[in-house]
Each structure stands twice: as structure tokens, then as C-alpha cells.
Length: 419
Image 1 (cartoon, rainbow, N blue to C red):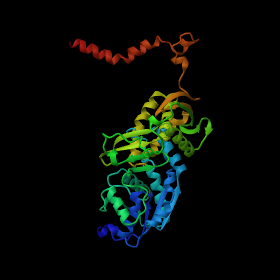
Image 2: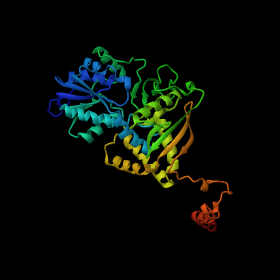
Image 3: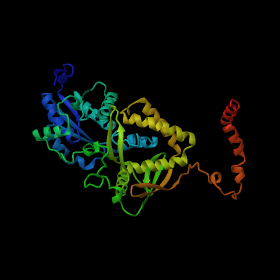
Image 4: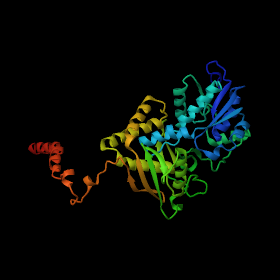
């Protein structure tokens, strides 16, 4: 490596804060940093965003790899409150993907910056590859929160070019790993989802091994789901899910409970060839059981509570919001302004949605809200209801159609005159 990369313009790097997951990439980064930045101290930070068992033994693994310290920061409540719920309220999806990795990165980067400042670190380091989205997300977050902070991205400068070579490096340096070459999918787990990339999934012609033991971790395939449906009722207050089957729950508890119920019923599997930020297409398989249920319930409730113009305009904004989140532009004025718009639309999105879960399907059973814009008196086919004409006089439709269709009629008449 060139000297300028070792010193960042002549300033020695003596302490580095590393975003540490305990996976292959970040495990080999620790000894690599100590080899290439002689005398540096590596401080690791792992943000608990709901990956549960992945945190077991993490401190021992980090220190065996050469780190001097590991912070494990539980940010699950903040993750749900400030990142997941705003995205649900907007109804944002990126090409159908529910943004599980994308909106986890800004909160991880936020906490990493806080630890780096606390430790007086000279630089921040991440294990994202030079082909992936996450390098953009991490670094844009750091630029937004600590623009003066140096950033080290080993995958963009070292000689390791594949995950097999990364495993070779780990074995050579006696770094403990919890993977093997045969099952070495690139995975990302958090409270919201689990993503799978790599190996056979890199070929879009190959069906994912949904029924292979150990492939799915949050649930089962629809084929293995129960033969009887499960009914659940989700309660919302101003667009935020607050209860399950009339039992009040905080966001973390609710998502974890829905992950279990949804996973058991084959809900939330999504196979996507997506357009990455860096320009290429990539294929991933996502498990998002609880999130898929919450999105559907929220969408159903909005059909009752939002007017037509707001619904349609919000859908257009949701696409742009999803692009901001996917592209790592969380800490931007536009995202904050769009949150304010979403909050305004959600003032009446309160009520309950009952869903039927059956073998991978989510079927709407019923929906109710004290702010419902639906009127049976207006919509009914039954002319026998008292005062029906006071509510809606069907004769009025003739004049509406004449005015609404006037441009079409004028154009047709003009065309007829011109032959």
C-alpha cells in the first residue's frame, strides 16, 4: 500500500473505529489494519439492530482478531422509532424491497461516529465492498455527521478480491469464523429482515433453495407452512403500529412477534434482481415476515383513511423517499421534509386491520377506523335506504360525464370534420 494511504496526507493513523459485525469481512480487517497501519489501535463497535445470536461471543472474537476494545450498542428502540416507522408511514419500497439493510446503515454509522468521537479516533473503517451499496450508505452518513472524519475502506485498496481469498486470509491469520466455504452466503441480519446474496443466487436462472435445511432462518417456505390460516389484528395510531390482537406492544416487541408468526406461515420471502447504487444489477433473497405484514396492514388502513389526491401524491413521494433511503441519503434536508409530509398524512391513519395469513399469502379480512372516509350510504347498490338521493343523486352523474368528457368529444368532432 502507498505511504499516502497509510498516513492520510502525512498524518499518522493511531486509532481506528471499526464497524464490526463479527462476520468474515470485518474479522479479517482487524489484523489487516494492524499490519498496514503499524502501531494503530483498533476499537470495534457493533450496533445491536436485532441480530440477536450473532452477538454471542463477539467480544472474544474481536479481541482474538486483534481489537483492543468492543462496544456493543443496543439501538433497537431507536432503529424502530426513528428509521423503520417513518419508512412505513411513507410506504416506501425500492423496487419492491422493504429497505431492511438500507435503513439500518445510517443508524449504525451514527453510533459509530459517536464512539469514534468518544475514543478520539483518527479514522473510521468499514467492511463494505467496492461493488456494494453499503459503502455509499456508510460514508454518506459519516460525511453528514462528521465531515472531518477520515474513512478507511479496505475492500477498495487491498489485494483480496473474493470471499474465498478472504477465508484464506482468515485461516492464515488464525481468525475464528462461524462460516464455511460451502454455505458462505453473504448475509445481513437485523430486526427487520435477513438478506442472502452470493453463491448459487448469483445466477438468476437458479431457484433459491428455500426448502434446503438452514437456508431460511426467519421462517419456512410456503410449502412447509401450516394447512390452516392464522388471523391477526394490528392496531395503528397515526400510522404507527401499536398493538397485536388488542395487546399493546412497543415497536421492537411487535416486529419480533410478527416475524415469528409470519415466518411460521411462509410470509415475506422476496427474490429480487435489483438496480444497485453503483450501477450494476444484483440478485438477493430477502426474508421480511413481520415487515411484509406491517406494510400490508398499513396500506389497507390508508385505503380507508386517506383521500384520493393525497393517496396518489403520497405514492409518488414514496418512490422518491425509497430512493433516498436506498441511496444512503438519510441525513438530508429532503428526507426530513418528506417525513413532515408523511406525518401530516398520518394524522387520521388510526384503526385496526385484520389479516389472514395462509401459506405465504396475506389476505385482508377486515378494516375499521374512526376516521374512515368510506360511506356505505354513498357506495351502496341498495336504493331502498332512506334519504339515498339526499346523499347521492345518480342523475348528477350525467352532467359530470358531459363536462369530464368534453375534451374527448371536441377532439372527436374536430377529427370528423377534417375527414
